[in-house]
Image (cartoon, rainbow over all chains, first blue to last red; front, top):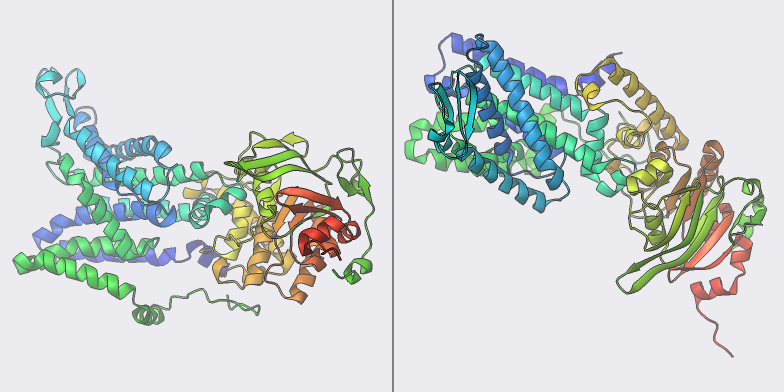
Length: 354
Length: 286
């Protein structure tokens, strides 16, 4: 029985425990007023970035395909979420319900975009897929730059030209082209962000340890063998990619509802790369590592604020040192022995110690 | 080519079919598991495989031999649709596989191993077998993510079935080891287990004894026969180890330059002058 419990939880328990403990500490510090206001303001974005890191890890680490356009899915979720929250202001007075709806619908819209992008794109491999996802991120940004959306008594109004052509009687403009969305009610909270992390984490870890997850990892490890074993490549690639997109969309909605204004330019190539840095730094395929990297790298610029001009320089140096450090065999061995991480040892016919 | 191994075994009586192939006598009234007719593939102007005609009985152990570069692995790739044949038909249990891709061919009943081992090396031995069982035991992605009761029930089934299959080669104790960390011989055996997990009616083994020592090869020969007997499936193998081929294969086809130059029982093949020439070259005329 104990063995089955260990098997179900696996290394997962550690990850959940880490997230929950850090949340409790932060929440306590927050109530004790021991966190600077600039750091407190970063808490929700950190949660959103952690979700993004987990979501992208699903594509990069588990599916094994490089996506350079995940900020695109984030923005789809972000703007959908904002529209939902503002458009339903009259119909659904409860902020929490609207927030939950925004997250869900944001996720669904991002998933639909994921299907649209995934069907043609996932037939490509390696560098080609990376380049097309990069282009996709830019396309999303440019489309959002040209969307004008407003709501009045008669419903939603949509235009690709300007606000005047929306033809609204009163009402509010939700998305104003390159000016982005304005007047967003701040519905995101640290607690909501924490819950979303737990959801995203559960979905991802459960997926990995299931029939579908094994199929996805089989494709990653050896495509030809997976095909010969009867694994439908396109189907499982698409499944993983769409789930990853949906999680990114949810993270986007959380992120957007933390600010009063949000512009499409926020979700550009740089953001996609930033998220990829979290994943690479945390170790590709290592969910826990990605979470830590996302948190540390978002807080770091805040902590270095006193360094003024040098802060981005130090940030870059830290990045390089961590990369070098984590790839150093000696250091890895030392860390491994401290944390008791077991590595698979070659078995030479004798009894394994497992 | 030593005859010792051959004599020690009970010989199967082989019977000719109308299609110029031979099958074991016990299989003659059953539909062949595989019938390849006029199979061929061209790459540009180069004909890599041509006029490949072969029938395999549903419980036959068949051998495909030939010098290096004769096109043996290519035939496997044609049968499993890794390459699309240019000409000819492949009937699998009587069903034409013309419109099938690799995945569908596997679901229809052909499983294979690879000459250069292709395991899911980052995953455990058990997971490799579970991936083989993918189409045998099913539950939805949602059931997996939400951890519905079906998930636990089916995962239990996955585990038990995987352990059973690993038992064929007594590999249960390696279940939690990463496949990439296994020694070479165990990797080859794991590939066979994974292929068997897909519940095939024809198992294609591409050089199963490569890199094995004589005692491992002898054990492998026992196991291939055992697999055929327990699962009642056909096995077709490519192999350079003549002791193995002559020892367990009932019908043998010899390939040279992409064409079958001889078909027959092990003893017929051993004495076929064309085969000897393909392997050793033509005798200089005195």
